[in-house]
Structures are given as C-alpha cells and as structure tokens.
Amino acid sequence: MTTFMTTFLSLYAAAAALIDRLAGTWLMPTLARIVFAGTLLIYYWGSALTKLGDGIFGFVVPSTGAYIQIFPKAVEAAGYDISQLGFLHWIVVLAGTYAEFLLPVLIAVGLFTRAAALGMAGFVVVQSYVDITGHGLGAKDIGAWFDRDPSSLILDQRAFWLFLLILLVVRGAGPLSADRFLFRATDKAAA
Image (cartoon, rainbow, N blue to C red; front, side, top):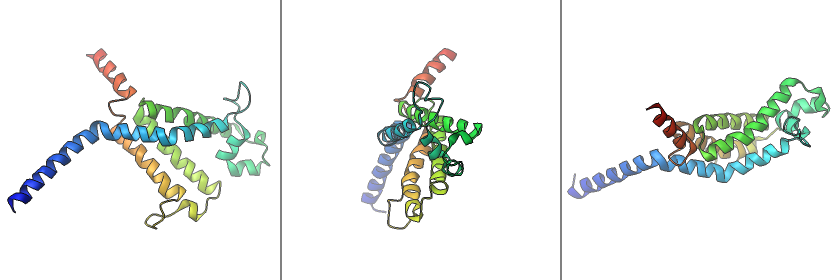
C-alpha cells in the first residue's frame, strides 16, 4: 500500500472514530428528539385533542370521533351509538388519548425517554394496524419498499418514525435531557 493511501485511511479512520464518539453520546439522541418534536409532537397532540369530549369532563368522556378513530368497525357495527360499546373500548380509547398527549412530551423533554419511545413505537404499530384493517387503507397508502416511490404512509413514512423511536430506545435521550438531570441527581444522592 502506498504512503498516501495509508495516510488517507488513517485520517479517515480517525475522523470516523471521532464522529462515532460524538454521534453516539450526544448528537444522534439529541437530534432524534428535536426531529421528533418538530415533526410528530404537534401531530399527536392535535390527534389527541380530537379525542377529548365536550366540557369539563371531556378528558374522561371521549368524543365519538375518538371511538371512530380507534374502533372504526365496532362503532359502525353499533350504528355509531357509542353507548353500545363496552368498558374495554372506553379504557382503550382513554389510554390511547392519554398516550398521545403524554408520550410525545416525555420524548421531547427527554424524561423516561427509552420507555416513552418504546411506548410510542408500539403506538405507531397499533395506529398503522388500525389504519390498514379498520380504516381500509389500500395498497397505495400501505406502499412497498424498494418501489421507487418513497411517499407511502405506512411502509415508508412510518418506517422512518419507528427508526427514530428505536434510536431513542437504544441510545437514550442524550445529555440535553431531563433523564440526564434526573439520573445525575439520583447518582449523587446514592453516593
């Protein structure tokens, strides 16, 4: 190997090692949370707001739209009379609504980030399943990988969402987060 090539490879390896150290410890988790907040925080909050019922007790009496979004076939089978649905439906709708409010905020501020990102990933999978089976999304919306069209809702767009969330599960929130502050305080108290 020539001296030039050896020098080039050494510099490349050193630069790659530096990027790995920076990206793994703070850059990637921080950017992942910023991208999540910038693209999905308001999306999920807007969705959650449509699920709240009217009045002061709207947070425990979900809207009809909440049931339609989460249980479209069951609501249709009940003639759009949500009083026909059971306790389990109510609990699932409330849990879904609260998850849409709470999990994105936890991710954005970096509090219990790994658990929140894992919960949000599960939410995205369930949301995609309901969109396909309950709302009848077709092949164009579901999409396919390696098809030269990166615009499908499920296999293209939500794959990026899941990748972002999995990165947060694996790497955590990064140094600019409530997790870092909380766990530093806990470590100091334990010492």
